[in-house]
Length: 358
Image (cartoon, rainbow, N blue to C red; front, side, top):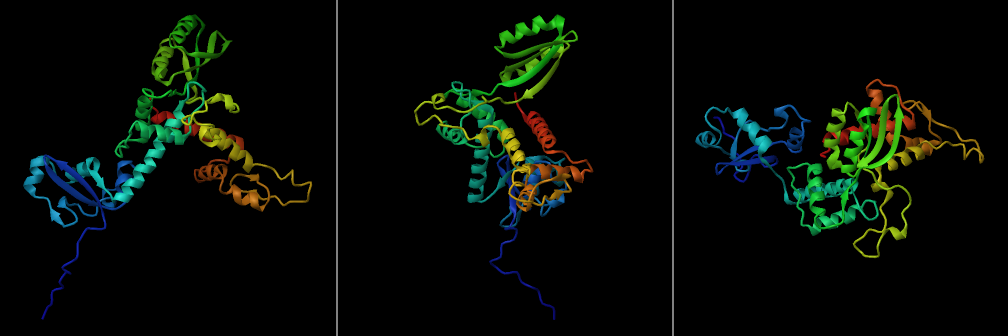
């Protein structure tokens, strides 16, 4: 006598999943996905659809296991669309359903990321120095900014900057460019730079060409690039965001609470922070040799001596070692601390320019 295994009455199938929901033509459709895979798919990291979807089925309610009706699918997506195309559309355009605390944590993290980007791209026009990230966050709360989880942080940061400029003394950090044009076209370039109120740092003449290092607003970059190309010249980006260098003095700020007293050096210039970190990691044990002989440990990955056992352990956590480790996997020779700093700075600059919206 055969027996049929009965499912428990209180069991709910497809509950421990990430649900992507899309409402189209008044009808709700859902698909069941693996957690943490939806964002990887949308960012282009994950390419295999089977690794994202738990089942190639369109539901009207995943938690209850209710399938979507065929007539509803045809009414919303059309008769010519197959189920795979419908799944892809829901996956790309649908809203990812997450728990309340998880959503709050994601929005809070993205809010801080946007504030950091705003801080790096703006300065106080009176002091020519950036605001602190906590100050930027407070200003964002004052303009009632809300995070859009479906939009990139950089795009939202630029929108925040435009909105803050309407209410507070804040402006975009100038860019530093090197413009090289033939000598006969120099007057045209100089005239245009005066119209743009660009600040000329230096001029150099060599081999029938004139080179100018200037600072200008990022919004003028595209027009400047087009002008230099028309003048048969060359444009180089020396710095995307410039902040005033030097120590901060009390006279640079007011006594009001809403003005930051001092910007932390780490957040003001990440390149300077990396430089100081690399310098600390490459300190020789020569200063301690006067007190006694200290055994130096050599890192085979970086092909350099990094000091005693404590400095040796710290070296493995350094950006220098991590960067050379990545080069080693690509069968590239190791770089010195100074070369590593330059290489990482150029990579950051290229990555920033790729997503930078002028």
